[in-house]
Image (cartoon, rainbow, N blue to C red; front, side):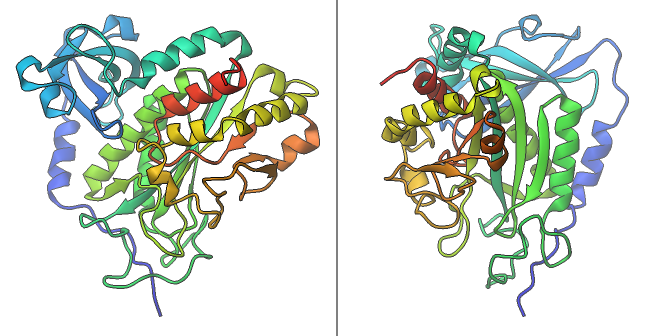
Length: 368
C-alpha cells in the first residue's frame, strides 16, 4: 500500500539561526531587505541594508544598486543596476521595526530592465483606475526535495492515485502543512493580502490565494507572497517549485487562476459586462497564452492539455462552473447576475504584472 510520507523535521542548524533572528535589536536601527525579480523573470533575489530611520512608504527608502552581471541583468563591464523601491511590507522573519522592500529593476541609464514588467503594468493601471479593476490570484505550487521529486512521496515510487488529497487532512493525505501554515501567518504579519490556502489535487501540491487587490497592488502582493514562501521553505530545507507540470502523466499541473472584475461587472446587471469581456478575451487567446508563462506558452503547453481540469492550449472556451474551460463564470455570479470571471489559463510561474496588464489591455482598453 502506497503512503504519502509526513513533512520532514527541520534540520538542526536552523534552530540556532532562528535564535539570532530573535535577539534584541538596537532601537535606532532598521534592517531593510530589498527584494527584486532577476533576469529569469521568475527567481527572486534579496539583500539587506541597515538604516538609521524607519521608512513608512517606498519613497522613504533610498534607491540602491546591485551587480546585475550576477543576475543576468547586465554585463560585467557595466554591471550596476538600480533598485527602485515600489512597495514596503513588515518583515515577518526579523520582525518589527524591520521591513521588506519590493523593488523595480532599472539599468544603468534608468531604462526598465527586460523583466521589469511592473513598469508598463503600472502605466496601464493608472489609465484604467476609474474602472477599478480588481484581481484575486490563486497561486498553486509544489513542494519538492533537493532532487526535484515531490516532497514526502515514497522513495523510488508514487503515492496512490489522485482523489483523497485535495483539501485533505491526515498523515497519508498531505505533506508540508507546517510550511503552509507558517507562510500564511508570515504573510498576514507582513501585510500581504493573502486570503486563503488549501491542499491541491496532487499530493505535495498546495495553493494560496491573494486578493482582492486593485490594479498594480495585485502584482506587488503576489510577488511578496512568493518571496515569503521561498524563505519559509528555505528554513525548512524544502524547495518550492512553480513548474506548471512538475510530474508528467496522470497528475494535475499547477496554475495561477486569475479572478478578475471591473466596477461595471460588480454592479447590478454586471453579467453583461462579464460576457462582453469574455468575448474580447476569446479574440486574443494566442496573445494571452504567450503572456501567461515566461517561456511564451511552452511551459504552459505541458499543462493545458484539456485534461486535469484544464482547457486545451490551442482552443478558447468558456462556461458557467466549468473548470475545464479557459474562462469560468462562477456559479454564484451567474445566479446573481454580477461578480467576476476566472481566467484559468495563466501558469503557476507566470508574472502577475504581465497577466493583469494584458487582461486590462484586452477588456478595458480594447486592444486588438
